[in-house]
Image (cartoon, rainbow, N blue to C red; front, side):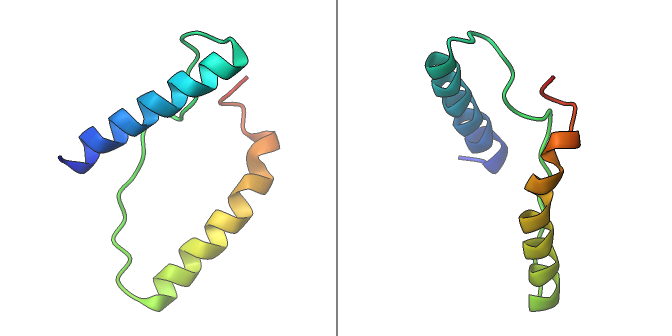
Length: 66
């Protein structure tokens, strides 16, 4: 199975479960796209780790889900 198809199925199942729990049928729970990144060394890996740790702190200013 190709990665894009696997991601589509995973996102669909997770959204379906979120919407069942929240009684929000058909609501979008994901940003429109994702980006594949090849991490080639530890310096790049550490930069992405730092980004992933800091990113949730910015969610309150992210208007995507409003």
